[in-house]
Each structure stands twice: as C-alpha cells, then as structure tokens.
Amino acid sequence: MCTPEITEPPANGLSYVHPGPDSPWNTYLRQIDRVMPHLGRLSRWAETLRRPKRCLIVDVPIEMDDGRIAHFEGYRVQHSLTRGPGKGGVRYHPDVRLEEVMALAAWMSIKNAAVNLPFGGAKGGIRVAPRELSLKELEKLTRRYTSEIGLLIGPQQDIPAPDVNTNAQVMAWMMDTYSMNVGATTTGVVTGKPLQLGGSLGRVKATGRGVFVCGREAARRIALPLEGARVAVQGFGNVGSAAAELFQQAGGRIVAVQDHTGTVWREAGLEVAELMLHVQRTGGVGGFRAAQGMEAEAFWDVPCDVLIPAALEGQITAERAQRLHARLVLEGANGPTLPAADDVLTGRGVLVVPDVICNAGGVTVSYFEWVQDFSSFFWSEDEVNQRLDRILVQALQHIWETAEQHGGWRQMSLRTATFAVACERILSAREMRGLYP
Ligand code: GLU
Image (tube, rainbow, N blue to C red; front, side, top):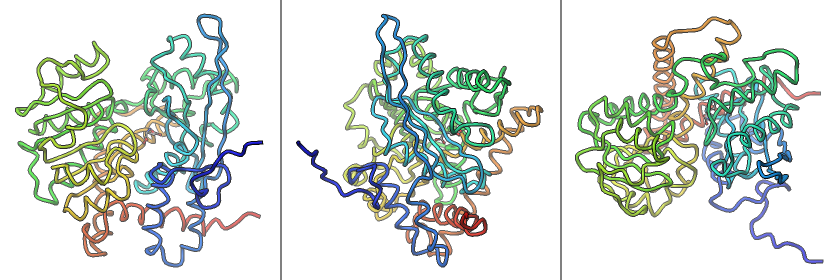
C-alpha cells in the first residue's frame, strides 16, 4: 500500500492538520510564539491557544439544477469559548480548508478579546466556488450546511456572520433554517442579517469603517496627514470599498485598487462611487475605464502612503514587503501579512495595524446586532457608528500604550501588542474558570 508522503511536521502535534510553512495556521502559531515571552505566569495556559477547542467537518450534499447530486466539504471550528459564545463568519471559497478555518477561528478569539467583546472565537466555511452556483443552489447549500453545523451553533453557543462571499441573504437563510429546526424564530443565532430580520444599521459598512477609524488614529500618531494621502486598496468587496469611500471623504486619494478581476491605477485618484457602480455592473474592478489597467504584481510597487490589504491571507510576502512604498499598512483582510514580512515592514519603519484590531469593526457591530436582537430595541445608525468609533479608539489606545511600555512599535509590533492584550484576557479568564473536572 502506498503511504502518502508528509513533507511538513504536524503543527504542535495535532495529528489532523499538516500546514505548510506559510499557511494561515502556521502564521498564527508563529504570532503566538512572539507573544509568549510577555505572558508571564499565564504562559502555563498558553497551549490552550495552540489548539482549537472543537473542529467539525461536515458533508453538504445538494441536488443541483441539472439533477446531479453534488457534495461539498463544510467546516465550523470553535477555537475558544473561554470568554463567551463562539463568534465569527462563514466563508465560501474554492480554496477553503480546515487548517485555514482553524487559523481564522483563532484570529477571531484574539480579535474579540482585543476589543473586549464577550465572545470566544469561531469560524466556518464551505469549499465551493459560489459564483458557479445558481441562487437556488446557493440557498440549498446554505440551508443544508446550517442544519449540519446545528450541533454547534445557537445564540448562546456560537453565532455565525458574513465573511468572504457570504452576505445578508445567506444570513437570512441560515437564520430561517436554524429557526425552523428549533421551532422558534431565533434572530440572535447569526449577525449581519437584513434589517427586516433583526439586522443592525451600520453593519454592512462596519468593517470598512473600522479600518478607517484605526487608520485615522494610527496616521495621527505617525504624523501622516489623511488630507492628500495616497491610498492603495487590495480587495474591493464589502471591506475595501467602504474603507476607500471613507478615506476619500477624509481627503485621501485612492490611487490603486486590485481585485480578482484586475488592477486599476490613477495617479490623481479614482472616483470611488463610480468604481463601485462599475463593480456592481460587471462584478469586479477590471476594465474600469476612468483608470489605467496594470499587471497584478505591479500593484505592490505603486507609490502610496497607505496600503489596505482587504482580500485574502498571505498577500504581503517578505519580498513584497521590501518593495511596497506605504508608511502605514491597514489590514482589512484576516492574515494578509506573513510573519517574515512583518519583520521586514517593522525594520523599514512601516507601521502595520494588524487585522485583529484593524478589521474588528465588523464583529463589533455584530455584537451590537446580537445585543439589539436580545433586547428587541434597535439603535440609530449614528448611535451604532459613534459607539463603534469609541470602542475602537479605546482598544487601539490600549494596544498603543502596551507597545509603548515595551519601547514603542518598532520594538514591539502592534500585532504582538494586540496579541499580548488579547491573550492576557483569554488566559486570565481560563485560569479563573479553572479546569473541568
Ligand atoms: N467575518 C468578520 C470577521 O472576520 C466578522 C465576523 C462576525 O461579525 O462575527 O471579523
């Protein structure tokens, strides 16, 4: 019998995952390594952070429009439930795999603790190319997946939300399926729902708004004026487009935008509203006529002051980190920067506001939505935005001070400072709860 060759050692002894060196789970483990020396007596509990509490893999069979039966692989990972119910999005992507969902769930634990939300960390996904499915097939896929992960989710157990390629409609189907299965309309089981079904005002743009708020605060601290700042954005979905809009309103120039359909560049600044219309019509930024097209790799050489990676993981490699011009990197995506690239950026004096605080605006407003659903009392958009602003400003201030206590962000990166704040919260809660039995 032929045994498959395993080229990478299993990550910290987990027999079920063999991540490559630059894979998201390994990136996460290396980020944890860096915070370890700062955890003091709590490091006794640190192994807790290196293994997910639960991983569920499900088979999702659906009947396709042409009568075929297709099977998809789905996941829900609960990395930590120490500080509250699991919380985190569901992603539909052809490259989704368990090891990636584990990392995304772990980053949710860190993010929720960094902002001090009363949640643990979780994430889900289906290995599927959603653009190849009809709306009906997408609905069947979502409903069957929701039923299969019904073992784990619930308004007090684990609360999914949108992520890459999922949206308010997908959340409506998830809410309905869960509610049908339990026999009661349960709006609090997912967040990011449509407004008519217990959604929150301000949720759709919350992640992009959070990126802007973190960017504004970080830029002030390194004396980078937003007025006239040149901004390059990778990913023009929910996060990238909302952030670009706010930077433009603050006087910034959006000089380059890249997505899966192409890269567009305009020195004088792209008109964000027009680009959004183009994307609505054509499905991507490629072919936008009010700008020049360019090679994908050239995106990293575009002269800019602020760079917003808001697409997928692993985009900023050490090599790209050497080339990029920005003084400030705002991580709208989860896990866009590899650990080696982090060191290059810090060495070059580029300030990175890490994903685990920079894109926390989405889950913060998800928390508001969950609270509003429970109290059946809904807030105005202004109230949502003001509370979001206040929470992120405070969280970033605390992280900044933590880095300052260690000699400033050139000595302790904001990523390590955020991990230090979050891990301290998670592990002290773990210690107080104690081990069962
Ligand atoms: N998917 C978003 C994230 O990565 C939001 C998660 C949520 O709202 O629960 O932070």
